[in-house]
Length: 232
Image (cartoon, rainbow, N blue to C red; front, side):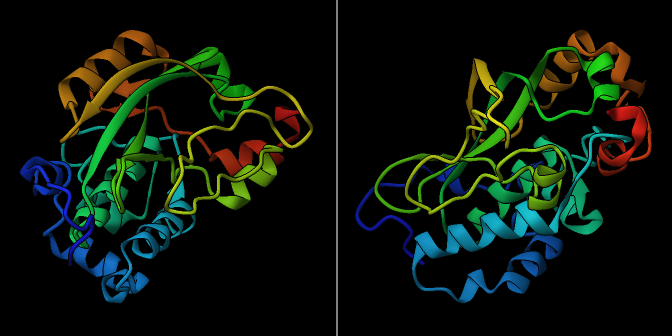
């Protein structure tokens, strides 16, 4: 597959790495189930994979596995759930599996999607929010295949759509016009997940979220939080 015509591709942008293990059976099977490996147009490939990750991999922060193994694309494709880091890692791997260069972008955001219960532990700014940077055509674009349609509906947010040609990264307002999801810091783009930077930074910024060295506290689910009377 030729993802970007005559533009040069850096080997690191398509590399099989510790986290972005796109040659693994689990990632290959995930991609095959979407049909993206049979799509000749790289832009359409990117869009198919975006929606598969966004809506078929459940977003969940409670009990998130932040171990090095838990943050590999193959594990995420197998367990089919995770938070922004997990889902962006899987999307980056799926893209590389079909010949599309990808990276990970690490950011801090204000008004990240959290329930009131979680916000009491996380605070107003969520650190090390992760999205995917990709180049399906002639330029790099950013995409966030993180919050699925049902979760967005429960939290009065518009789901992020993606056309494969322009950035899809902001939730500027929720469904009733309130300001939402403001990016306050960009840590950079990375060819592989900067694991130590993220885990050490999250433990420093969000200590109340951790139940162990590499796992978040358990709970019900963000869906349950949204429909619980306690969250209103």
